[in-house]
Length: 536
Image (tube, rainbow, N blue to C red):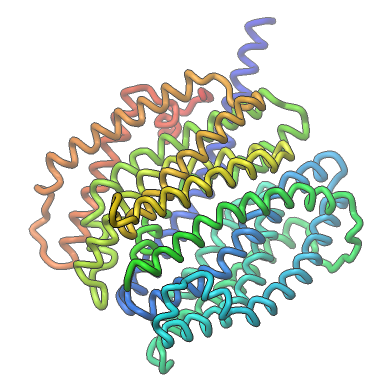
């Protein structure tokens, strides 16, 4: 019986790991398409607007509603909703869970409408707070204010779209929500392509694209929601205990996430003081860093949260620790080589994606420097995306809130020190470095907290994954340094750049994958049918 019991446990573990892998792979694949479209969007934006006045104004204007979006949409309310919704679904049934979702939907419609109106009215104050350096140029400041006013309604639709995403993920449906961001990217690409010449100030074509993209992200998920049997209705019963549970969890999450958004606010303010183009350099670099972050870490975190909430609701601690272990090891496996490549081999990629039209070689060099420092913290950003939802699944938002406040304090301190001319004098690159160091610090705090919750066990498994991924990544870098300059297909111009860059990426990925396979990493085996195992 002991042998049979052990065999059954291994089978269950294998099926559980395989299910997590399949769900993550679905989200990653769909997200990858969206990220590629996102790179096309940013590439076209760099071509048309470069890193000049219009680009700086748009990036600041778009960042203002985006900060609030992080709180309402991809932040506190939507993240707090998933574990409560999942718990209600498991313990009280579908009808109660759907009623909870409809009440939160109604509440969000009311609150978001008020926030949008207030945001439009106080846009000049917000821009002054966000980009004090723009005040020296009345035209740039005025343009940023107008763009901010037009972009605020985006907050309404993207926040409701995030709620639908949370509902669908809780039902185990990941593909449609993950593909919604593609609608946003396609909308912006089409607006720039067809509407650029129709406006006296072409930057307004971006406004049309953003608003249409926000509406599209909401609308594209409704058919999938209806196929799940869920009907959106207005329900004003705000005394519902489930809604109160969401609010109780969301309150400290809002403080914690607001604290972390202070990092972005401070970086934007300080970047606006670093001269023309500084804000754009950081945004363009972050877009490239965000590609592996979105495709890998966000996808894994998206799948992990509802699974972790379900395990906790059922009291399955062993399954919870196994899920966390699988998620964090997979993050290490995918993100470490990405960070190494983006840090040390980004020049060709930046030139290929950005350097044409209004975007110059000097702009490429500046973006490359910022990307180097952002890449240092990629492991931290990715680890936080997977670790923090575990606390929320435990209905503990106060601990990560505390960690976020400490992280903000460190980030602000480092930002001010690293840009000081008499100290480090790193300029805008110092802001990227400060953000990265703070991200690693935040991850360290979260891991310590997870140990206290007994969710982080079998540390040897993590250390094994860490040294193997770093060793394989170092081998990848060595190979690329040795042969990348020799990769040539006898082609010149854009075609030659595309082929050589793709070949460099493919060679690096192949070297890393073979190395991890030889080292016996279970994560590598999962990508080969027949070799997949349930090992953590």
